[in-house]
Structure formats: C-alpha cells, structure tokens
Image 1: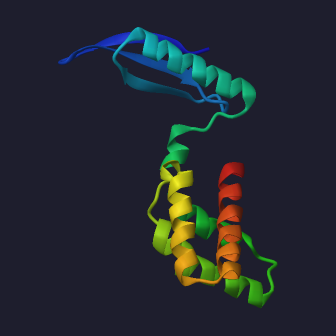
Image 2: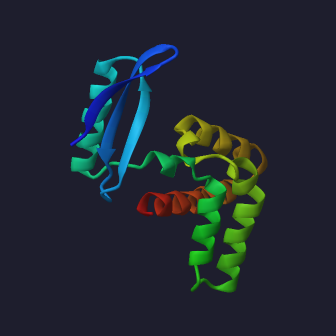
Length: 144
C-alpha cells in the first residue's frame, strides 16, 4: 500500500508517495503540489501493480539502442543471412533514428514519422522488414 506524506521546500509544501514495486523494493515519487495529486498517483500505482501493467519509472530511461543491442545478441540461432539482414536494419534504419531515444519517449506519432521517412526512400518490403525488426525489439523490451 502506498503512503502519502508532505515535506517542506523553499517554494512551499510538497507531497511525496512512497510505495513498493512488484519486486518489493521501496521507492518514492516526490514533487506533487497537492495532496490530491499524490493520492491519485498512489492509487494509479496500486491499480497498475494489481493488473500487472506496472512499469518501473527507471525502465523508461533505457534507450532503444541499449535494448536493440541486447535483443540482437540474444539472437544466437539465426542463419547468416538473417543475422546480416537484422544487423543492416539496425545499423542503417533503426539505430540512426532511435539509438539515444529513451523508451519512454517513443510515441506512435514518432514511429509513424519514421515509417513515413523510410517510405520515401525505401521499398515497401524494406519498410515492412524494418518495422518487423523494431517490433521484435520492443516486444523484448516489454518482456524484460
């Protein structure tokens, strides 16, 4: 169960929420300007934990480049041609666009713009394959 408490800053009273992650680690979120905001956040965290949709805030700071390299190194039983195609998709299309992008900053709109930019210079088959590779990477990120 999350707890809400206040603390004082030079700018006035602020509120913080302390809660346990699904892994039982205690964490907190500070800086709420009202008790109601803090209570709403606490309730949302508890619902996410109960429904299994909780994602640690630190997970969103991991970059797509980190996840992509981890995904690629996990693909040990690929044929040489498939490994080459995946590496090419990463090096030519995915990493130049998203290598330093935190996962939390990936939006549908940003991905749509990426697909649109590829469509202008690549064949439909290449776009489809690159989207498939990115989809696999993001699936692994969700699993991890």
